[in-house]
Image (cartoon, rainbow, N blue to C red; front, side, top):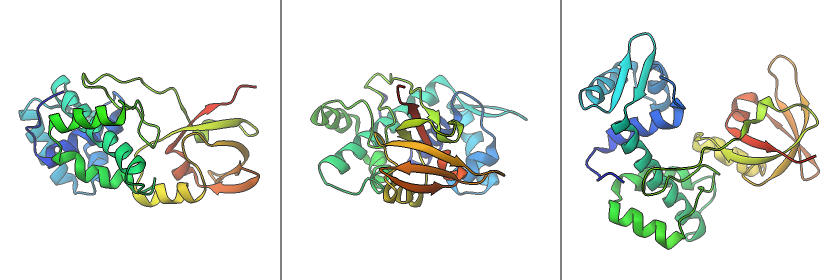
Length: 222
């Protein structure tokens, strides 16, 4: 992996682009929204990253990572997700809390510590939220999950992963046992973009579409 030579601010921008982009350019306004900053600040940082060869900005299309920028972003993601595993498995912190704590630790972790941590953990493939952990060369398996709102009523599914939501969303999902590995059924979809009604362990749970978009699932075999 790359040596850690970038500031925390730069790493956060690049990681945000990697998590949100999915290979497509991202509007500067969307970057600002995800980082809770002004569009002016986001635009200034994009220009700075562009000069360093980390991103490519195409007017009216958006911002995307260069090969160099993606390498840095994947390295940050590896550190974060390894720390998530450690915090949950060895410090017994809450599943809903480890993402935010790991976000703080990722910026202070040297490459030698990252690789020692990976070895200690047994080189896990996914983090506690079901997302893939890149290996030391930046390679990882792309998940084939389906967004929960795309599932038809009556289908049984297993939660595969949760995509980078705010901490209060993770706490909300944990309270309702909507976590990786949990089986559930789509009982009802309300009209007019109303909530989904899920059946989980014999009880019904309502989940708004905005939150459901964070949940990726796989279909159970018939």
